[in-house]
Image (spheres, rainbow over the protein chains, first blue to last red):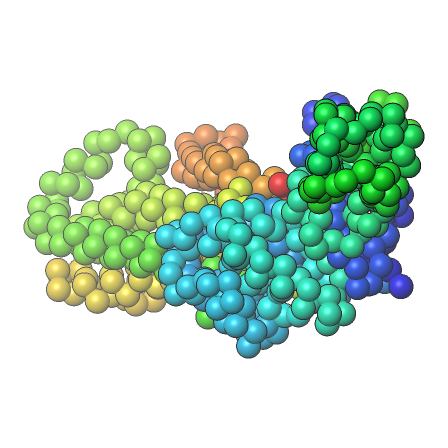
Length: 303
Length: 268
């Protein structure tokens, strides 16, 4: 079953007499238990989608469901089951983190009051300091605490790692993994791929309000070009590498071969094996290039 | 206290409400402390007042036929005609405009509305928090007058003081909920303050000028200040129909606030 589903969801914003598109004819499906990376440049419509799901704004046309509940009719049922971290999480500066957490657990009928201090401790957040004295990263931790504390069935996280240092990001990844292990679904929006690539299983790419691609991260990875450098003990002939499967770019420089390969390295490694190999250096597939291609030219978007 | 929208809003305003209470009480004590001086030279002041043009007296809310040397006349002229309504309105309009529109502009409203609390309930709890603070100021006003008056030879019944203070805080409550409603409908705090302050000033003038302009007289009952002053509470005590009108007007503003807030897109 799908945790999140939208049906030709459209939101136009009126600005004077003109109107701008937030999202248009969006058909999004996020399966239960998935970590779905929702990607797109700034202004592509990610936050618009999220705000529609939570009934903060209302669709111009189309509709959406979260956990089978209609976002307009059954918003309270949805909001009870969703943990939300807004893109620019803001809280009243006069309160301490503990007071903010007490407020939000109160609004949830006490749900999360047991787990909130545990999460705060894991994120190394001091609950007793007034929020105005906290750094941006520490304030973001307060946002994470309130999003995760009631063990929601759906987590909606808008650019969650903004301002977090790498150690806290790791802890955040653990929190996400635990939530998913417990059956939760995660919608993770970001404008940078690296933020979602490590934890998401599937990504949707949004551009100018349209969903231009939905792919498994593994599929994207298979399509990505991997850089490889092979150093031989002696010079090798260029012709030996020209018709190797998967090789997209090749450069032969005496005893060194540099190539960019799509998919499996098998054919290239076998071609190399005919000569005396010294070292092989390769990098993790770089999805950024694939991603940027989607950003630039979207099929079916002749705007 | 923090477990509800109502409680959190009051909690966050605790320092500012306390400051308003202290300020209001201090001003009232200072005003009352001058009463013996005025009373001693009462005849002179009353003669002076009789020479002022009636239009000027009307604008400042002075009842013709009242004497400044009487406790009721003194409190009316010095406090209840202008100072009290202005002070209470400033506190009320700021609070009403901030509670929805201000939080929306600061970006803190979004997460609240994403919690499992209906917008109707959020708006109503915020109305309640604002009105409670308005009434608290009225209570401080009445208590200070009742407690400090006798020390300065200013003796007036608790019913008279209570009625005038209640009406003052109800007028403030109406305008704070009006500001809240404008903010709930637009999400813009500055606009809510400006519109409500403008309407408030117009309503004040409408009520105080109508005795002078025959053509305006039928419109006088549109001004909340009519129900604040017309029953002369400092002389006659409680006049419940006017209390009911102000409560009803505040409730109507609250309904408008809820309706506007419920159907609107929250601002980013």
